[in-house]
Image (cartoon, rainbow, N blue to C red):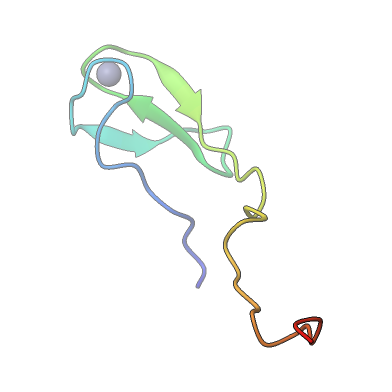
Length: 59
Ligand SMILES: [Zn+2]
């Protein structure tokens, strides 16, 4: 996995004409509205994992 997640649409104008920005690392620029933006991974959600069989306090 060398490529990072690529946006399909511009978050500002909704156009699909996106290309990587020179700033790199998740930076994209929209050829339609001339905006540059950056995607950032914030972290994993804490509610994602279920571990019901971890506890035994049901006695
Ligand atoms: Zn745009």
